[in-house]
Length: 550
Image 1 (cartoon, rainbow, N blue to C red):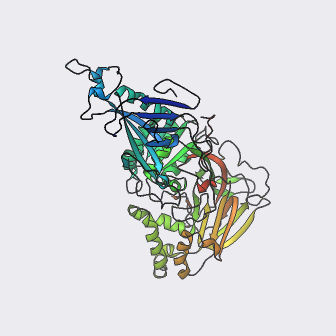
Image 2: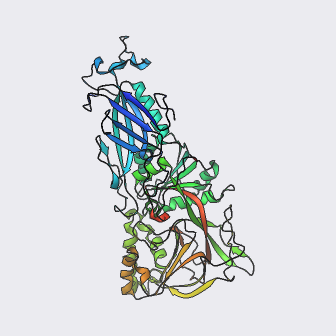
Image 3: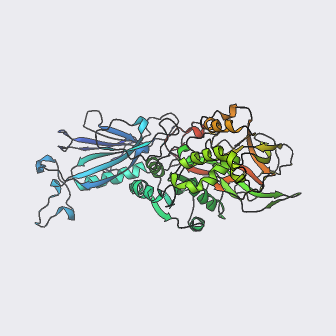
């Protein structure tokens, strides 16, 4: 990075400006400093910090300082400060065309430059600021201390002798704070989550990305299938980020479009969840469950590898798998039983946002006794299934789960050695690739996004009175301690013998009802943009950015 004064040392670059700053009440000048050495590592962030920017009076403690990962960028503006005299600035400036007014006189020294530095911190650790703060969090953030620390945006204003100085510093800070310039494709679903998709883009994401040097492309969805067409047309490499501004369903469509590309392979795609939907489960778990935090994380581009799973519907013949539909790829869950019914049947209440799930769950449980004759599907709370599964750690041969290209058919046959089986009626069925279905319901709190397993859960039928409290126990993550619940860590699952109208839901999206299906884990298949860490969904690890790689 070339800094304004062109002076380099091994660790520090400094610019001293002997200018009076009446606005800040400083009579002895100000010091801007960029440190090119890593800052003090925080827990879970070894070698991550790329330097420190600070501002203060010479020989005094800094007014403020921030690590590179918290700096979004900077911009320069003309500073119109009343009461400034030519004697307030020491030294001369180089006139520009904008400095010469109609009277032909040079007024450059009377129009100082205003350097505005934009930073973001997690609110739990936000330092006291000496300049204007602007908390821009959207109401989707989880409670403090749950999944992540909510982002708080702040600006620091520094008056410099001229606009030219401010422009030079702004360019240097932007380059220093964003060492890796990337291409970002922002796919906006305008109908997601009460129609918030477009507002999240305009009010949060776009203003932040404008402060960065990244190359940004915007695409607004218009109808079913156009996301797939767009994702097939774009060029993708490891410097490209595809961000879905919507709910988990929007990213499910984006991910499947990417995975169906001919050049798809393990580790090629980097995706980003920007919350604008009803549940926004994945955004919360990767540390960016509100729009402001997600915009910051997207601009900074910190990423980790995440597991996926492949989902196939079809039946096994004697030797081959006969697919009834194209394979799908997911990141969240496969559900059947009560949760699947509630998820799909509450679609008519989508305008209510996240509360639609609770409202329909109450309606289903409380009304089933009255509706068992006139609406048997709505009243049903028991579901027949045969579950076959291959537990993690079971020795297998011929697995293609670690292959570079996405698998298009199952790798394991469920009657092979090592598979186990359960058959009967159940009420809840969850195959979890993530710890939670939304920001509250942590069905599998020990699940990690990088543990190369899926958590298989099911519950045998219980009485209707117990069902009312079962949802509360699932939110409190105490349900697995009760009798009737089973959980296994697996790498593959095959489910058949379903009722013809039994719903199957993948990442909140409806698959074919009543069809046999199989799912298998795909370890470390995509990169995901993450927020402030350390993150519990990655076992407490945060982004292991190596300076040499950058």
